[in-house]
Length: 96
Image 1 (cartoon, rainbow, N blue to C red):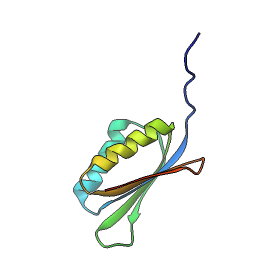
Image 2: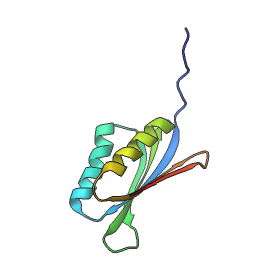
Image 3: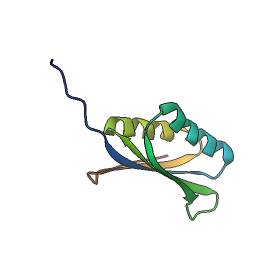
Image 4: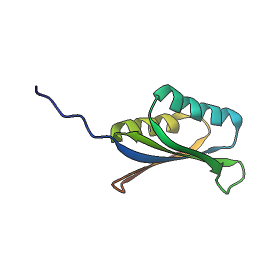
């Protein structure tokens, strides 16, 4: 058998700063549902700024999948920033 070995899955914490509107929250959860990525934890809480919420979740996937999920969030209307934190302390941030 030849080929490239699959990249190992690891935990990535994703923090999404988004508008505090029901339609934006519904779209955010829709991204997670459509991608069908394994999520270990999920939290939604106020960001400290009026009209903004922070959605934080831990997903068990490889770095490529975590980046794709972050890109999907970045494309959404109402998302202000997306940050992906990997186990290796590498950080990727996308701001709108």
